[in-house]
Amino acid sequence: MKKLLTGLMFFILIIESINAQTGWFIQPSFTSQNLYDCKASAYNVLYMGSDNGTIFKSSNGGLNWTIYNFNDPLLTGSPLKIVMGQSNDNWTTAGGGNAFGYKHESMDTVMRISVSPQIILEALSFVSGYFFYSSTVVAGTGGHFFIKDGVNWRKDTAATRIAAGRNINYSSGHIFVGDNGLIMKADSVGFTHSNGEHIKWRVIPSGTTKNLYSVMTNSGATYMAVGEDGTILKTTNFGETWNIVPSPVTEDLYSVWLGYGYLIGGANGTILRCYEQTFTKWYKQTTPTTEDIYQVMTLGYVEYISMGRNGIFLRTNDGGGSLKRFIGTSVIEGFYNPSTNLLVPDTISVTVRSSTAPFNIITSSKGQLNNGGYGIIELGPAVFNSVPYYIQINHRNSIETWSKTTQVFTNNDLYYDFYPAANKAYGNNLKQVDTSPVRFAFYSGDFNQDGFVNLTDVIGVYNAASIFTNGYVPSDMNGDNISDLTDVIITNNNSNNFVSKVRP
Image (cartoon, rainbow, N blue to C red; front, side, top):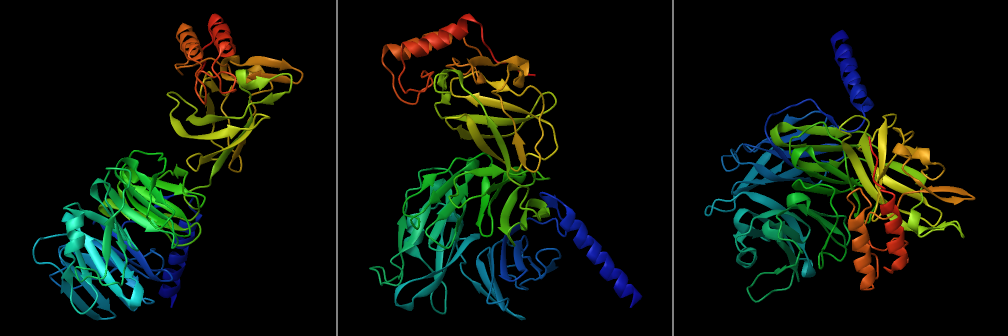
């Protein structure tokens, strides 16, 4: 009994230690094999595919894992890229190499899908439609598709022909994604088509030629797909049209998850998180690894896990870190009207930099100043509370400006106003634009954003004014959407005063 109590207390201490950590942290290793697909079959019951036909199972939300193998040579030795536990943990499925396995309690059933060609299965979807039709569709390398809507598997020759040799890398619902920007959709499911099949396949334009490695739906009309070189795509109409979403990284992205939280995982330990359901603004999170992340998933609203190359397994109990905000009031010289004390609203970029040379960029984000110069810019979770940072402000045609001294975030927010005095900026690099109320502003005139206002800028603005350039352009120094003599004068005056950026 004493040994049992001692062991129980030790386990509780481990759990408390894990729960006390903030951000993403590495969970003690249980394998050196690559970890691929991971799915839940019941509350806290997870199955995860690995190399050599290995399946790992956890019954406590991924805190501990045991081997749960198919003891069959058809799967042994293959990487299991697709795993799915279902029916309240009564059975699980796994695919790899040329075989697909079902495991029901203690009974294994493994079916060979393909003898030739040799392929690796990467995608699985349960596709259903009209007239109570249901099927299991798998696909993989070389663009080979296989379907099972009865007793046996067969090759879906139409889907394979349409894929045209391009690898299929993942699927979600009726959407399959692959190399060279390939997106295929299972359509008119359940009807009998001219080839005798009950699925009509279509290629949907993706707008990219980058390889796509993962796709997921939020169980509605929205899907997200991710891939090579930081590619992020979004559709809100069941995959009919796709748009490119701005990405904060250029690393390959291998996994996307839309559950309790919205996550993307990728190369070099990359994890991105989105905080709203428009799925348009993604923030890079800080992780303690450079190993590739092959899968990200959520277990609860702030409890997430991720896994990947060489057995890396990460966990967070606070959503990977809280969203940080820069809150303050600033004025842009040419955009400010001292008669009305109002600013033409415009976008600025806020960059958070480390406090010591070479003042590395921690994170950066854009937001808008309103007509009072007030703005709230969300910066993501890469910034930590109580750590000193320099704040750098950029605007489309103003001089880059830094905070006078380092600043710290408190309770996830940093309040800092640049307008009250020149000494709010590093090197006192602000221009007074009003005496009542007192207002100091970022210098306007840096047309080409090289950190100087000089003859090059004057010529650029003059040329734009000469041909009456209109719209949202860098030559518009006062925000009236017209390039004219007023803009030239603002630029020329600051050029004559040799205005330039000042930074640590």
